[in-house]
Amino acid sequence: MKRREFLQSSSAVALFALSSRRAAYAAVRSGATPDVAAVTGDGRPITLRGADIEDLAAQLRGPLLLAGDDGYEEARLILNPSFDKRPALIAQVTGVADTQAAVQFAQAHQLLLAVKCGGHSHSGQSTCNGGMMIDLKDLRGVRVDPRARRAWVDGGTLLGHVDHESTACGLVTPLGTVSHTGVGGLTLGGGFGRLSRRYGMAIDNLESVDLVTADAQLRRASAADHRDLFWALRGGGGNFGVAVTFEFRLHPMRRQVIAGKLTFPIEKARDVLRMFADYAPEAPDELYMDPVLLRPPGGAPGLATVEVCYSGEHADAERALAPLRKLGTPLQDTIQAVNYELVQRMNDATDARAVATYLKGGFISELSDKLISAIVDGLEGHPDRATLLFFQHCGGAAGRVAESATAFAHRYALANMMTVVGWPHGAEPQEHIEAARRHWRALQPFTRGFYINDMAREASVQDVNENYRGNYQRLVAIKTKYDPGNLFRLNANVQPAGRPLRQEARGRLTPFG
Ligand code: FAD
Image (cartoon, rainbow, N blue to C red; front, side, top):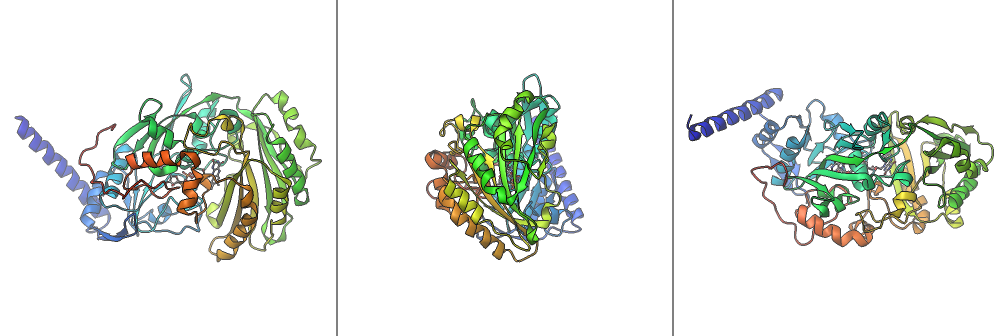
């Protein structure tokens, strides 16, 4: 067959395949796909033509969901049910090719675009009204190479999956503290957990990230490739594209750690916080502490708890825990030798969607007596609302990295302090949100910025910019280079310099740009 004939026949085959997949999509929808009302990134209403939606569906291996389709109602939700948003389209991508097609479509139509991994965003950034959601729930998988001490993690994976695979090989990488949190959002924002004082934050253990950028190109970011992007991805959040693979370094660690909780009545709250104030700065790197104050709903007695995880030699654990033992006899003591993977599931939600939540958080570099008073005095009880004040112990290896080494700019932190209120989903939220804000107004003066992964839903552009501290200008330059039209804006957004440029979607995609 002559080359021209071959090309003609192969494009005919491709066209036939495309039109039959489009027809299959239309058949599933029992008829032609309707035009769909949508919004652009800057909020302009647009109409997506049914034929264009069918073309996109035909390019995807995973489903493309519209309102009314099976699975749409589940897919549009994130963990916090108070974000009740309805994307115009949900692309449940299965790999790089699907992700590129979805990004290209969003770019071509200038669609508002949300990316969902674990759906844990406190500010609801992983869903949207009227735009496209790229749902990574079918892009989950972990491959461990025990000899190279590396894990390759797909962009939609939850962190429990990584712990499961790595601990089976006697290896770990430091991720967060709740196993159903997404590796995607957690890592791109920084990633603190029970091992970050020992091995650094999640970003400090990244070797490379494969990323689909706003021009739908696949790029590898590492110390050798796209180094600017690699720097920005370590703390700059979802600003730069869709991360499809993370490569993490792994560390040998015995499977059992010494972990659990000491629980005291709430009247002990000041003592618990003073212990943390004194001991947290000098604790060994192997010790992670998380003081938690709880006012349960309905007048049940309040509790002051210290969660701990000691990952060093078991023989040294009691010495490391001695300052906690001085708190006296607890109501309950669950500290014991236990599999790290189980500890990582200790705080998993059983029915997260039943409770709506609102969180405020900020980094502290010390826990002064004044702050302790503001915390304890402001912790209100309520018939329907649970109020929680808790910390994540920072410092150690996470604090020994230069602030300009990665985009994450809060290496000084002793702890991340957060207050959360939770109320039954469906109840009027305003009263509960106001209570949290009231408490936070007294605490905020003691903080020095916030963790972008705990960004409040009302954070202003100025709050976000300032929060990147000395790294902000460099982030703007990298954002302008890779996403000049601000396609990836549902995050702790770094706005590109100058007028947003309109990028034409590219016709042909190469494996690595
Ligand atoms: P999503 O809501 O899916 O996404 C959050 C943001 O990340 C969005 O802007 C999204 O677009 C972007 N994003 C997600 N995946 C990708 C990807 N693959 N490519 C590009 N962009 C992406 N943080 C800690 O550091 N340590 C903890 O121990 C910890 N515990 C938590 C426990 C709970 C119950 C909750 C609700 C949050 C916790 N967090 C913790 C905060 C957590 O890091 C953030 O909520 C984080 O954004 C969650 O990531 P996700 O993928 O689940 O979220």
